[in-house]
Image (cartoon, rainbow, N blue to C red):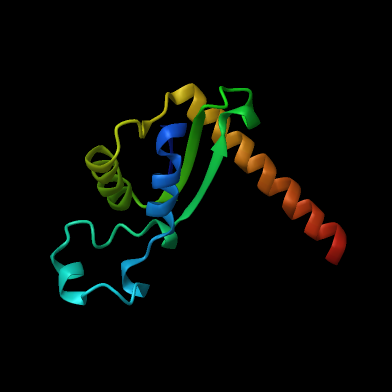
Length: 121
């Protein structure tokens, strides 16, 4: 699995969250035949590992949001195409910021795992 980090302006974060939480296969109002014809029918973020972080959490501007996304390369390629098509500000973040966010999330997971270990250990 690959990990990528994307950034987004505050103005588009709510729309991005809707996309991330949407699964067309659980939407009762969608015709299944329309899903089959959609070129992004297999880009379902809800089925991937992702987190959204506000920039202020990692000493970056609070007007920026960061999407941590862990998925296979094919999924990430299609996701980037979808981002370009639907959003003006969503783009892959700079390498140094990406590394900082990945480290932050890994540290959070490590602390959570240690906490569970203390409870159940």
